[in-house]
Amino acid sequence: MFVNLLCIITLCASTCKNEEGNSHYIIQIKNNSSNQIIPAIPVRTGDGKCTLDGKILNNGGQDNYRPFNFSIENSMNNKTSIEIYIVDPTKFNTPHKYYSCDSIEINNKVLKHYLLTLEDLKNNNFTVTYP
Image: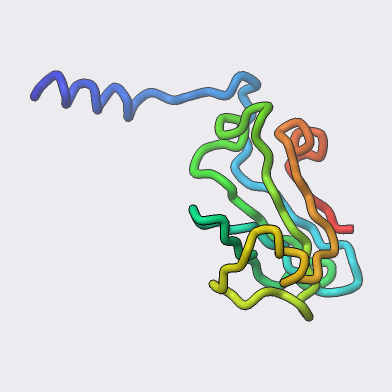
């Protein structure tokens, strides 16, 4: 019992550092267009169904997206990417209604599709600017 308690205390007191020492937890999304947009994240089920989840972002506005519970640098590697769709609010899928993942562009008016690697995020200071 004492050993378990000692392990828990040690784990709680320790901190994980990113190799670069500068961890990021959010991606800032900026709408520099003259229209409202929906920055949307694909939500997938285990059986190949998808929906996009997002909320309206006014022109000139910005929002934050936190893709992981841990830092982005510690959660991604050179084989992973983050998808963000920019969608016109006039044609956005019904919330919580799932459809075939290859139908995202049929069920939504996609203005831009970002497939971001860790390197892309670093190069853009963890900011996505539309357009």
